[in-house]
Structure formats: structure tokens, C-alpha cells
Amino acid sequence: MDSSETQNLIEKPASGPAPGISAEPSKDHEKPSRPLRIILEPFQWIAMLCRELNASFVFGIVLVYGLSQGFAGSFFRVVSDYYWKDVQKVQPSAVQMFVGFYYIPWVMKPVWGVLTDVIPIYGFRRRPYFIVSGILGAIAALTVSSVTGLPVVLALLCFIGMTAAVAIADVTIDACIARNSIEKPHLAPDMQTLCGAVSSLGALIGFSTSGVFVRDLGAQGALGIMAMPAVLLVLLGFVIYELRTNHYSEKQKVWEKVGVAVRGMGRTIRYPAVWKPSLYMFLSLALSISTHEGQFYWYTNPTAGPAFTQQFVGIIYAIGAMASMVGVLIYHKFLKNHPFRSLLFYAQLLYSVSGMLDLIFVLRWNLKLGIPDYVFVILEECSSRIITRIRWMPMIVLSTKLCPLGIEGTFFALLMCIDSLGLLSSKTGGGILLHVFHVTRIDFRNLWLVVLIRNLLRFSTLFLIFLVPKGNQSEALLPPDLLKSSSSNQENVELAKLNEREEA
Image (cartoon, rainbow, N blue to C red; front, side, top):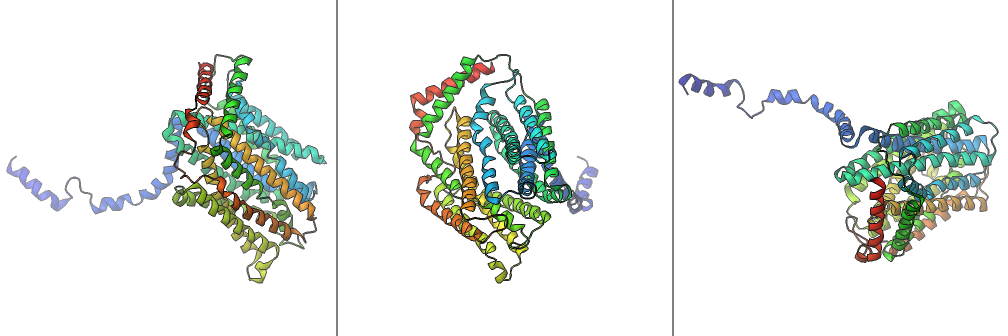
């Protein structure tokens, strides 16, 4: 190295930074790009999922969870309430019973699961079921929105058809998610995050717009919008990627697979470590009877209640959807490592206490405290949604811990069926209670008593907490003998071989 080169190296720091050291001007230059990176990050994440999992599958999650469940489910909740109230002019106790019937397709979730697993149509296991669900939902939505003077029974059947379309699509996309979770387990959390995110976003949009559409189109006209998500499910059935099987199962093999799954479920549910927490989840949902329809009629009553408008009812639920997202964050950040029994006990206790806010509101004690109706109902909705989410998520985690290998998909569908039965009992019990205490479209004198009984039943669930295991949410809960049982393993192996032959 000559003297000139040495001189250049010595003089270089005076005019600029040494190699590997960032200068201050470059830091200032990077600052404007940070907000852009934050904005682009979700799109880059979705692009990564599309590369790893197939873009049509990601589109399917967005469509089923975001549009069909999130948007359409929240939109349907508000619009159907106004349809029964303003178009059919049905009593709140009857509507509460009708809402319970909406859960019948969800109770049949194991049936849809078995159909999509073992009975392919033209060589496809998933695509035809999206098409069937979309056609069913579109016909039901267009019928109830276009036919004037529709009898109550036919209107109820249309509503059940709309919920059946969502349930079938949900089971089908869940089967796709389960398959991808097995093939690429490192992306399983990302798939669940995508499901939760688009579902909450869709619910927020659905609740926010429902009141406006009811005001401008009427409740019956607004139901026609429910046909659009259903039509897109038909489109999904044609575009989602799925390999066509060349081997068609004989009926004997189909029923053999069904028999193996049913026997495995029956053997598993008989274990105390499984049926006790399953019983708790059912009773905790069934005893939390729903009085929503009676409160909804009271909300919108101009004399007995606060007379909320259609737009404000939608805003209430939209704010509740955002609060539900807060509940997810609280659980994820602070509660996911707590033991099942203690977490569910305190969550149920908070759930029971929060129900007293409804009692305060119905008795109008909030006005005596100087809190306006509009402020109090938002506070009540936010607290209820946050606590409900914190209470619900550990029960879902608990359900996944109760599923044995080999029949985990079918058994999880069975547990969701049990939960749906609990929700059906909750809606039906609330309808009976509203009828017994003569809560009608114009008579709300005993509504406070119905809400009080509901709250006492919530408190009674605390005495059933002994059914919940004490283990942590990261621990295995199934007894070793369930996994090591030769007969159980024999059926699991048999089911696995049948699946392999089916896909060969």
C-alpha cells in the first residue's frame, strides 16, 4: 500500500462514516419508510400464505370466515331481529325459540364432517360441498326477501337454510385447514390468526351497515343482501384448488370408515377425563339462557324502553365486535398459560357479574346514577363481549385437548355439536322463560325478573367447575391408556389405512 492510499484511508472518516457504521442522515432517511412498512406488513404476510398454501385456499378462508360467517352472520343477526319484529310481528318469546332452531345445522356438524371426509362427489371431497352450501343459502335468502306474506313456518325454514349453508361451508373449509395444518404445522397459528382476523373484521362491517340497510330497504329487502355471500361460495367451489381422486370408494368401504369413526368417538367420550369437561361446557352454555330477543324488543320500544334506532343498534353491535377483538388480545397476552379450572372459574364469575349490568339497564337505574342510555348500553356491550370472548377461548382450547389421534377431526366436530346443543338449549330456555313471565311486544314489566333468573343460573354454573381439569393449557389432558389402548390404536390405524387407500 503506497502513501497516497494510506492518506486516503486516514482522511476518509473526516468526510464520511467508516464502513459498517450508519450515518445520521441515513437514519433520518429511513424514518419515512417505517409507516409504509407497517402498512405493507399484513399484505406481505398474506402474500406469504398464498405462496405457501395456495391463493385459492387463502381466498376460501377470507370468503367463509370473513364474508360468510363474519359479515353475513352479524348482518343476519340484526336484520332477522327486525324481520321478526316488524314484518312478521312475532312475540319475543317465539323469536327466542326460533333463534334456537338456527343451531340445528350446527348440531349436525359431525354429519357434514363425515360427508366431506368419506363421500366424494365426482372425485372431489370439498369443492362440491361449497357449491351445495352456496346454492342452498342463495335460494333461502332470495325466497325470504322477495316473497311477501311468507308464512312464519316457511320464513323459519329459509332462515335455517341460510344457517345450514354457513355451517356446511364452515365444516368444509375447516377440513381444508386441518389438512394444511398437518402438512405444514408451522403455519397452523397463522391460519387461525387469519380466520380470527377476517371474522372479526367482517363482523365489524356487518354490524356497522346492517342498521343503514334496514332503514333504507326495510328488513325484508335487506335480507336479499345475504344472497351475495352465498353466490360467492358457489364461485369458491369452482376455483379452490383440490386434487381429484381417481379411486371411487365402494359403499362398503364408506360405511366401514364411518363405523370406525363412530366407534372411536363412542370409546373416547366414555372416559371421565373427556366426558366431565364436555358436560361442563354443555351445561355452562345451556344454563346461560339467552334473553336477547326480549331485550331487543325493549331496546326499540318507544315507551317502555330507550327507543334505539336501527342505525344505533348496528353501532352497538359493531362496537361489541371491536371489544371482542380486545378480549382475544387479552387472552393471548395474559391468560393463555393459566390452568383451565382457575381461568374458567374466574371467567364465569365475571360473566355472571357482568350480567347484572343488563338488570341495572332494564330497571333504568343507570338514569338514577346519571348515566345516559346510549353511554351505558355501550359500556355494557363492551364488557359483555370482552368477558364472553375470554370465557369462550379456553373452552375451545380445552376441546382441542380432548381429541385423540386418528379421529381428531371427527371428534372435534362432535364436541362442537355438543356446544351447539348447549346454545340451542340456551335459546330455547330463554324463549320459555319469556313466555312464562309474559314478556310480549308491548309488555315488559317482568323483563327484569327474567334477566335476574338468567343471572342466577349463570352463578349456579360456578358449582360445576369441579368437572374442569386442573391442568395447564399447554399440557396433554388425555390419559395415557386412551392413546396406548390396543383397541383404540387398532381403530386409529384402521382409519388411517382406509384414508390412505382412499387417497391412493
